[in-house]
Amino acid sequence: MDHFIYRDGELFAEDVPIREIAEKIGTPFYCYSRATMTRHFKVFSEALSDLDTLVCYAVKANSNIAVIKALAECGAGADVVSVGELERALAAGVSPDKIVFSGVGKTGPEIARALDAGILEINVESEPELEVVSALATARGMEVSVSIRVNPDIDAKTHDKITTGKKENKFGIEIERASEVYRRGAALPGVRLDGVAVHIGSQLGDLEPYRNAYLRMAKLVEQLRAEGHEIERLDLGGGLGIPYFERGSNFIPPSPNDYGNIVRETVGHLGCRLLFEPGRLIVGNAGVLVARTVYVKESDSRRFLIVDAAMNDLIRPTLYSAHHAIEPVVEPDAGAVTHAYDIVGPICESGDTFAKERSLPEFAAGDLVVFRSAGAYGATMSSTYNSRPLIAEVMVDGDRFAEIRRRVPTSEFMAFESVPDWLDEAPADPERKIAG
Image 1 (tube, rainbow, N blue to C red):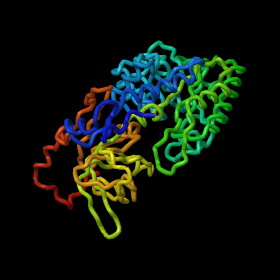
Image 2: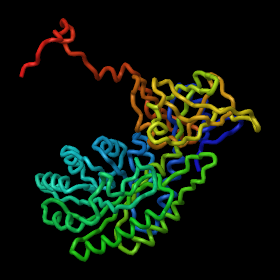
Image 3: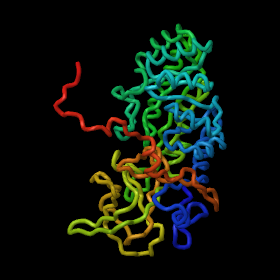
């Protein structure tokens, strides 16, 4: 369920007409519904309410500080994968003891910042990383909680670019080596190995991979405890899928309640504090991308709907061949004539295509168009490719809205660049040999 609905012939975000926002701030822009994201968080949390849990919102899905703060006010912690995301979570008011730091490539300075902030735990993904954590913690006279992320070699049956729990993926330590790594880690100073972490992928539509992974984790926790390790926490990751409203699609993701039952059946008996890292599930359908039609271009074989948003604003269709439902802001009449459109942006690449031969009502230049299910991995993966401005982000709350990231014009990111003095000199002799 979301709060983007047609009312009186036009699309609203909660109680605000999309058209009104577009008139005030221009297009393209992202629009988020606070009511939708908080509802999704509560539904997920309530499905696990009888267990000892901490739900850490995966900041990478949408890292806007206002989004993080809205969820923190519902009780969410934060799962971060960079020091930048850590700073965003702290700025949004997330308590450090509700922050988990994941990721395979944490640098020494990033780990040091996390230790100084006093976060709940670091999810370590390799033995060299564990040694760095140990050294930095020891230098500070600290003992820090660490979970080892284990790779259970489970096929999540999702897109190959977002699966994370197979042996060939870069994440975690092989489950067969977990016992050895915990034994070696227990001898290191400054670290307390009191947790286990797992994450098998994103946009899962089947609960069976979760069941298989969690059963392996339960067995591992019992083995580690038998070997003398006090395992207090089990981080089960995220990845539960969402519907992208594709016509004719049979994809119906599992409900949080069904997922919660799997958790109870597989690990509920362990007495661990259970951590979860949902991202897309919370914000995916809480956001839309709003654009304006620039031209309708017809050829012998195609009808192109050219909009002012582009792949730099929403790269998921280009990167993952992802489907996003596309709708006009003005509600079409019942039985309205439709056409097959290729919906494309202005970037100088054929890959700048949102959809091909999508059946839509007739569009004209100037019409507003909405890309649904864009709240996750939309703005966070955007760029300034073709020197296009970073687009605005808006949050709606009932009958009010606010710009939570203003449009960043080209002139501002050009200000970070500089021209060396020697480029004003005469061009170098192209035949000159480089010394050495």
